[in-house]
View 1 (cartoon, rainbow, N blue to C red):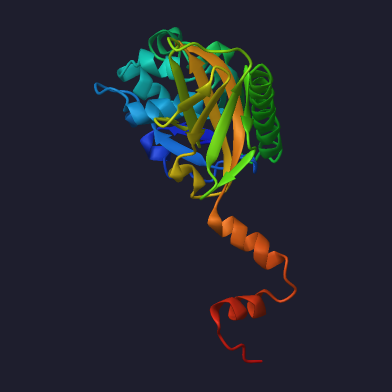
View 2: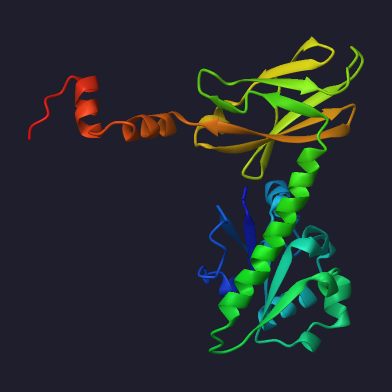
Length: 270
């Protein structure tokens, strides 16, 4: 699955090469997962499970092979990973009544709550319908995330960090005591990592260094704070890479090539 990944496509192996699924252009990354990776005797890898529950859109291709696989290999865990408010199912070569009570009871627990679109042969309107529904799901999730951030019980300074200036200050709404256990984590593209260098300045203020892996590419990173196991919300910080700084600097010059030659002490031949 994918955004942070933004979207995931869940397909049976025979269709795993169908990479050209119409996806909204706002998705930063789409991860295609074979159905065999999440059903069967083995357990779902923890890293894959974490990505699946964090994506904003879950695309499921429901075809005869898919239904046969979930019938032969029941996977209740799959039903829990597919979040009904984020699932868009493409019915390919099957009808609504093809999904039986056995399928729903064994693996597709929340199927009736999914958004579902039937894929018809030579249907010119399907792509438009698909994108409309997909963008609707993404917009709803974004609104939910925004509301969650508005309720955060802390703020962050500065709003932008970069290599060499990666210190982040957490300003809490309510004071903490020495006995309180504070946890700070950062989420980059669905990968959530605990921050180990958090320090307390006073009862209202924490600070930490943004991990280096968050500064490799310019992007927005989510910062989560917990107090005694209770979440205090989420805020975003913009992480800017060195290459982004160089790009902005070169764009500010009328002749970027001449500027680079001056910096490097090279001769520019016309």
